[in-house]
Image 1 (tube, rainbow, N blue to C red):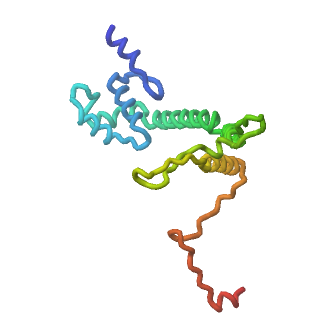
Image 2 (image 1 turned 180 degrees about the vertical axis):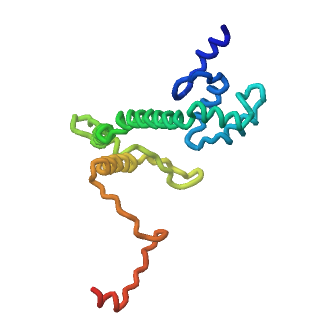
Image 3 (image 1 turned 180 degrees about the horizontal axis):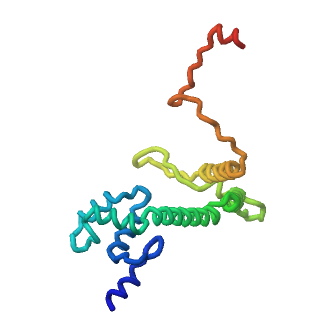
Length: 207
C-alpha cells in the first residue's frame, strides 16, 4: 500500500511517469529540472554528494545517465523550460498591464496630485472684512532672532514656502515626461566635459 501511495504522490514536473520508472528516478528527474537551463548531470551528482547518502536518489553518475537516456530527460527539460518561460511571461504581462505600470494610470495619479498642490498654492485665508486674505500656504509664519544674548529679540516673520512650488513644478515635469513633453537629451560628453573635436583642412575640403 505504501508503495502505491508513493507512486501517486511523486509527480513529474514535466512529462508522464513511464513503465519501470522508479520513485528515485522520478525524484532525480525533478531535481534536475529544478536546476534550470544550466543543469547538467554532473552538477546534480555534486548536489547529491553534498547530502547524506540515504536521502539521495543515487550517487552514481552512471545511474543518472541511464535514467536520463531511458526516460527522456532532455525532452522533459525542453517542455519544462518552455512552460516556465510561458508562466513568467504571463505574470510579467499581468503586472505590466495593470495599475501604475500603465502610463495613463501614472498620468492620472500625477494630474490628481497636481490639482491638489495647485489648490494648496491658491488657497487663501479670510480677513475680518470678508475680503480674500493672503496665500497662507505660500507665505508661512516663522520666527527669527535678532541680536544675541540677553538682548536677543524674537521677531515674527513670514517665510516664502519654496518647497511647495518645487513639488508642484516637479509634478508638472513628471507629467510632461510621461506624455512626451520632455525630450531626453543624449549625453555627448566625456565625464561631463565636452568631447573635443578636431577639424583639419582635409575635412573642410571634403565638405
